[in-house]
Image (spheres, rainbow, N blue to C red):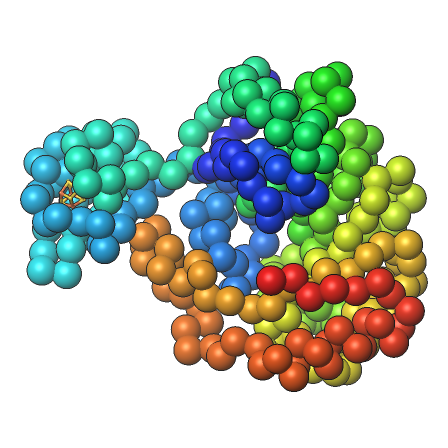
Length: 300
Ligand code: SF4
Ligand code: SF4
């Protein structure tokens, strides 16, 4: 069993309780414009070029067997039609400006990395988080990792958009101790327009998560002008009460941390110029969910 991943982050403290190893899976059926990991969207490996690290030496251009690279004043241009993702440019680049994002690994290879930190999980109450991308798109692989964790008493967290088949969700839920579950909008049309997938599927999977033994935290990104009006937030609170009344809620302020990565994978950031949340907005949003009787906090 193999999976495509784009990062394995050890000593993470942002993806669940305690010290964790977070396995980031590549490939996502959603296309949220605020996505902070654009390199996670494509399921296939791809070239990642960072202009800020580039020394403009041209070594990658000379190494490319496909003639897919050209050096200009503005940096190296990647012709992604010609690129076959052979990795020769990344191997030639001493400045680490050219990389391949995405590699295939077996469950055993991932477990070998995870088990290095067993002592940290135990002493900190941490464990392993599978994140994405969308983990339900590689549910068997995630399940394989969670099986290894379960056998060694390691806490597991599934970080999901909630979009995937019922079978995929059930496979992951069976071995998850904690689920981080995104809710991005309350309106069916707006959800489809913003994310590219239907809200109904997400809500059906949310009910499955609620019915499972896993603890559920619903994560709501607060995106100015897109989903943070008081009416939309109140409606999201109502949906949570209706579909997952025992879940806690974590509000995620909008940030632009991922903006620079868009150029690195040849994409344009869809929300350029969008402002961040004001402190007043965050406080008001928290009140909406608390008023609905939900346990809510604002994430950093
Ligand atoms: S991955 Fe290979 S084909 Fe693609 S740009 Fe780099 S050297 Fe050229
Ligand atoms: S080899 Fe690396 S540093 Fe040199 S031009 Fe290519 S990306 Fe830039």
